[in-house]
Structure formats: structure tokens, C-alpha cells
Image 1 (cartoon, one colour):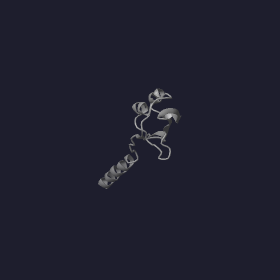
Image 2 (spheres, helix red, strand yellow):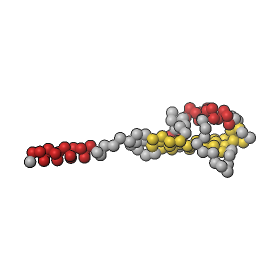
Image 3 (tube, one colour):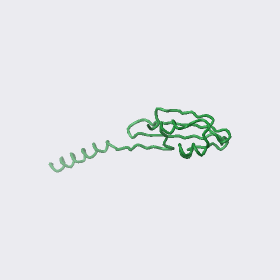
Image 4 (cartoon, one colour):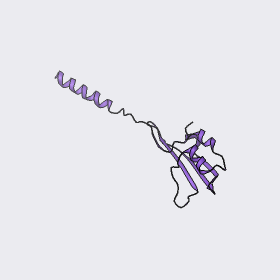
Length: 107
């Protein structure tokens, strides 16, 4: 009887511990920081942009003058956070850029 009770206690304690699951942060895409965005200036060449930002995450096939940098961070204990930086070029020079979700950029 005591051994059955002990075995039941051990099983219950093991099952109670299964509810605690570690979920690591899962960053995806191009890691983009506020510092990188601050270095962007209109008139920069594509090569200079690559030196600052790295290669783009997306380069739409039908709009080659547009580059997208998408950064998605999924904290293990929370909701996914996304930041997107969209760049447009004219004659291989940065014409304009837009930052969406700037509060989700790395510092």
C-alpha cells in the first residue's frame, strides 16, 4: 500500500513538472537595429546600404528598386513582434525608406 502511494506521488510530481516548458526566443529574418536605421541617408548607394543593413530579406521580383528588411522576434513567453524597413531606390540611390514597427527594433 505504501509503495503504491509513493509511486502515485512520484508520478503526480513528475506530471506537474511537465507543465513548465522552456520556450527560447526565436528571432527570424534580418536583425535590424535602431542604430542601423539611424545611419540610413537619402542618396546612399546600394552598396553603402548593404554595408549598413546587410543583404535584404526580400527583393520583390517585379519591383527590383524596392528592398525589404523584415525582423520577427517571437519571445518564448509572449506575442510575436515584427519590424519592417522598406527601402526604395532610384538610379541605384536610396530615394526613401519607411520603418514599420520601430518600437520592435533592437536598440
